[in-house]
Length: 373
Image (tube, rainbow, N blue to C red; front, top):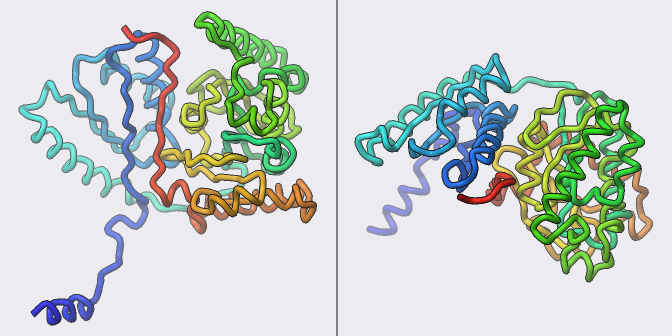
């Protein structure tokens, strides 16, 4: 009998047609904010969630809330409207304290989400110019090779995209400590230079007020591999931004407005930084690493770029692109930068799926600037 069932299963034609061909899936943004922290943190979280709702890679939103939290649904609705007055994606809100039961709330949420999928599926993909692409550049688990291979290669990719009218987001302010003057000199306006300087000073002062500081940024792994001071680490980290002028400076969650290179205030922490870059509008993130890290993002593909051949061989399950040939002299920084831009085009076109996406590495950590109360 088992054999007969097995034969029937294999003989039965399998329907591989997707119900919603224009939707890649449903992602969950799990977090612990909005309730017990300061009101300022709740306001910042609201702006972050509004940014994700309005993200180009997001087709619709279902919001689940408790009901009595600092971050009220009305505040989120207000921030979404403020960020994009023309927002017209399907969006649904549910409060547990207003529901008969949790089971009833979830059942209704699933039904409404299905209706949202029907609506979102009507939007079809269309060819777009590279000027529509916004790439965030990030490094994590850096080694002694990062600043001379992967980071400058990403920087060349950044310069190429900017020349084509695209947008680049360079963040991780603690990891720009020591390289500030070069970035200030590249600012196209006094206002941008002043904003960058003030954000750096206030962030470092906040860190020092709790017994830390930007100078304590290098991790044990960084130090072991030669990045013994924050200045050394920052010099290499800043190369991800290329050599283009700095056209704008954005605080956390502020949306990118101009073509070119923008600086975005985020922590250096891998997940907090990628979360912030996506909020500012990154549609792809280039993430360089010399030691290896599996970080991903729920709505923005994260492409892992290895700084050396050894890492690419040791962690092929998380590495997408290898800049090791720069170290061995087989290729130049310019060649690898051009190849990396081609790779980004393949990712943006859906022809290549980065490892972090394949593995479901949907990391999301809001930056908590205040204290818990």
